[in-house]
Amino acid sequence: MVVALTLPRPSGEGGNVRVLVHAANRARALTRLRNLGMRAVYLRGNAQPPTPDEVTAVLHHPDGLLWRCAPDRAAELWHPIRALLGGT
Image (cartoon, rainbow, N blue to C red; front, side, top):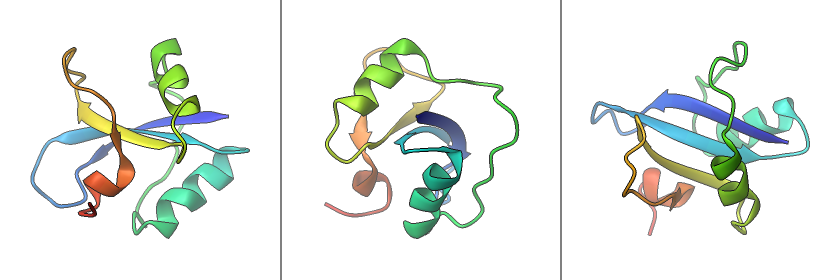
């Protein structure tokens, strides 16, 4: 299952990010994000389901966790989640 969420930036810089998570189910997707320090993440409905391009991107990434700025910029590529959280 692929879960897509639009969240505020964890660093507090302003703006939103679109996060894609590949997991066995919705609960595990939330657990993966919470384990990374995103404690205030909740799923409420399915207002913005993942597009086919987003599903393809996350399924082909080894970590199964990607992000990019929201609203989407056509030229921006997907980034690994560690780049959002301040890792290398």
